[in-house]
Image 1 (cartoon, rainbow, N blue to C red):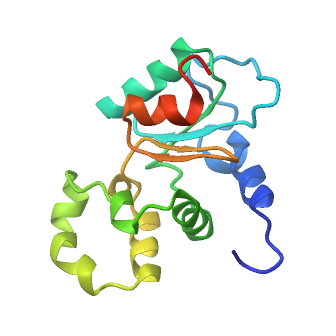
Image 2 (cartoon, rainbow, N blue to C red; image 1 turned 135 degrees about the horizontal axis):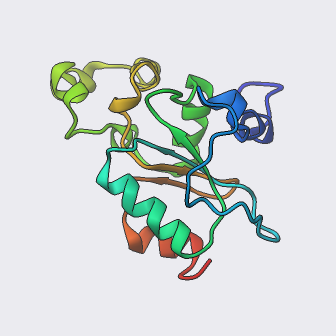
Image 3 (cartoon, rainbow, N blue to C red; image 1 turned 135 degrees about the vertical axis):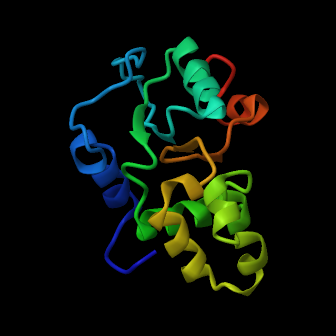
Length: 160
């Protein structure tokens, strides 16, 4: 983490739609405006045409879990945010790449990743939101990459 920048500062900057989307104040039609006691706000970076994203958003909505939805292509995370989230996730950076996407294939990342530095990988991810595996769920205590129901249950509870 960069000196003088707190995780809460990064999260606060990203938790307002005006700072992170091209449509300030936009919310998902099914998004629940309720805030839960003792639960920090969640952010879900998603792509509307992504089936995994649709499943994750449906799962969250079905459990009345409040979240902010951010279009990952229109407003990808910053390098500072993504670096922090990769570190917090405990996952290798390769897990953050959407290996089945066109951007990954066209960019030749299968061949390039082994020789790239972490900083170069983060820069590439942030330069093209379609390169990031989605959905990407962020809260004060959780970083989830992709949608696997068992991981969501483990992190958020069955009924959250």
